Amino acid sequence: MLSQNKHDDPDDAALRCRHCCIRIDGLTVRLAGTLILDSVDLHVHCGEVLAIVGPNGAGKTTLLRAILGEVPYRGSMSSLIGGIERRRPRIGYVPQKLQFDLDSPLSVADLVVAAVSHRPVWLGISRRRREQARKILGVFAADNLTERRIGELSGGELQRVLLAIAMTAKPELLLLDEPASGVDVQGLALFYQLVCDLKRRHDISVILVTHDIPGIAAYVDRLVLLNRRILAEGDPGEVLSDAQWRHAFGMDLWPAAALPGLTAGRPA
Amino acid sequence: MIDTWYKLVDALLPFDWAHYVFMKNALLAVFVVTPVYAVLGTMVVSNRMAFFTDVLGHSALAGIAIGVICGIHDPTWPMIGMAVILAVLVNVFKGWTRASMDTTLGVFLAFMVALGVTLLSRQGGFVKYTRYLIGDVLAVTPSEIAWLAFISLAVLAYWCLAGNALILTSVNRSLARSRRIRVFLLETSFTVLLAVVVMLSIRLVGVLIINSLLVLPAAASRNFARDTRAYTSWAVIFSMVSGVAGLVMSYYWGTASGATIVLFLVGCYVASAAAAHIVKDQRQGRAG
Image (tube, rainbow over all chains, first blue to last red; front, top):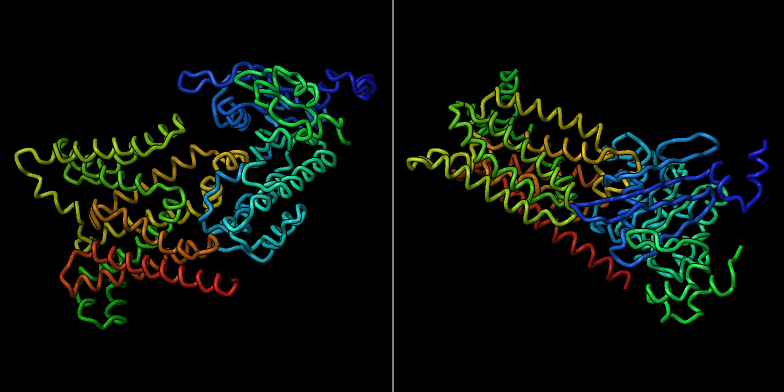
């Protein structure tokens, strides 16, 4: 009961963290003798969107791949959801559009059913499964895409399909890899809106990796500047108003209007 | 079992060519292996592994050579052993580096071919191994067909169990990983299965031809298929029709069966590419 009371205090981040969060401690990745990530600590609270920004080659994608367990790492990872601690959170992953083979003879229904069921899709998709796929896609306004080939989708459409698939895993942690790449401005705004709705309704943690700092500033709760190790961390406004960091990331060249979320305070 | 097949052919196919036992055997072998090539080929093409399967086919030369040196009469086992080692090695290498595998595979290809030819050409004896280069489906024996049928069933079972996981992995490895698919295990088991099928096929179709039989049906199907079922089933249709047509025509033309089958597959590819192009033009014409 005591911890519950303290949890209500928004300033007590440490205790809040003890109640519900994803923790990454001392994550170090060395690939072929090169140090890619150097003891990175990240605590993501439930219902929080954390953006990781940094120059090319800063290790952003490697960080995602380490969280997915794709590359070997040193350090620890744990999730604490509803008081239950686990070594690895349930993860939903939304890859970036540019990694897709757009000539692939693969329909949206194929992709969804292949992800959520064991019945082989090369034998064809039953009416029931097709209906199920439509329902999964419908949550993200993508049910009209079911019969399309994935190569025919726009960047925003593909992203909504991938988000729908990621959410079927009932993730505790949602990873978004460069959501801005290959997506137009309107599609991106809709996508970020959907992600913010998700975090509110399902209380999930979101880590996104991006170059698009002006685009995300309005939607994220915390910003981490990464270049092999964490250089700065905090409220987007605080981090980016630091002249040194703005200079390091070439942002001193941007007009202030390009950073609406920073100058006008954080929207609800 | 094989007698039932002979009787069936006699009853259904009253043609010149179907009269001979070697043609009956070859026809059965074609029926058994062509769907397997097509199915495996869909994943080879989707994963851009065409060069890898070519290297795999050529590693047969090294396998044969090692078999000969060790005094093993039937080189099938050393060939399979060599190819499986190669398949696992390539997968391990792929995990180490994110860079393109092209050059690494080129080195493997050079090594496998050079090792095989060097060892087999001792005392100028390479000529007697040239049959492995183009293969001879007409020389297939009922027991070899039984082996092929067994591995075909294994591929079918594997495809039922792992088909969806293979699709997700070919779409995006990290996405597959996030769905708790063990990507390394999956890719390694797929390439090992591929290695076994390729090696069992070398005697039938030869080192030079096997890769075409894997790649072309899927490539032809990909020209117009819009979903996975169409992709797979059209690849199987192209593969089986070309297999039978090539076998029968090679009888009349007196040519090597494997190469003749490949010519029919190339025909399928060109026809499907042209058809897809025309359909696309019409659609754009209507839209514009």
